[in-house]
Each structure stands twice: as structure tokens, then as C-alpha cells.
Length: 150
Image 1 (cartoon, helix red, strand yellow):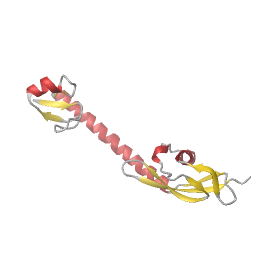
Image 2 (cartoon, rainbow, N blue to C red):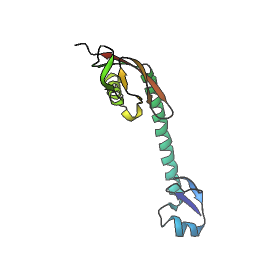
Image 3 (cartoon, rainbow, N blue to C red):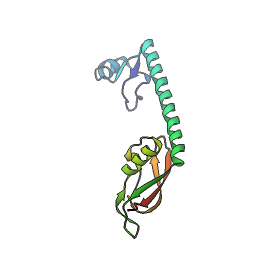
């Protein structure tokens, strides 16, 4: 009997795949637990449509991430912070500060958790800050930290 898996099942398959299982396994285990449903031609066609939509959305997301990587690699941010005479900052530049500067400069909203400022920037200077855009794409944003002139 053919079944469409609704969840990933170890040793059987991943969600959305059509697998062949014994009738008793389907009737007594998979269906009562909501792990699978009977594969009818209409449901198989629906699963294939959903899979094609998911692949198209994934390709669009990858293309967008590649475009953002290109833009961010060419981006130079200038952040101003209060600093002492020796160039040390009063406080630090964090990933949230860099995310806000990217959003202001390029209009790209990036979650601060995807920006790695480790350790936090505590001195005036030039830094390359990595930004993880997913899909194994990492952009390097050149960040210049300069002191505020009073």
C-alpha cells in the first residue's frame, strides 16, 4: 500500500515522500498517529505541486541571498562612537549596531544573530565583520569605527 508521509520517520522516509508500506503498519501505526495518509492520485499530485512550489521558493531565496552577499561585500560602514584619547571606545560596537547600520545604509534588514562581532569591537579602527546569509554564503562587511568629534 502506498502512503504519503506527513512527518519524517527514521528508516522510512522524510515528510512529503510517497512510500510503500504494509496495510497493517499503515492502519495500526501510521494513520492513528497522524504520521501518514493514504496515497491517492489526487494527493500525490498535490504533494508534487507543493514540492515544486517549495523548490521554486528555495531557488528565489538562494538568488536573493547571493545578491545580498554581493551588495554587502561592497559595503563600507562608518560607525561613530565615543572614544578616549588612546582610541579605546567607551562601550563597544555590537552586532546590533552593525545590523542597524546595514539597514540604514543599504535597506537590508539582517537579524543581528547572523552578524558575528566576536569579540565586540572596543577600539577605533577598520574591521571586517562576517555576515551569515544562509545557504553557506558569508559576506564580509568592511566597518570603519571612528571617534565622535565633540
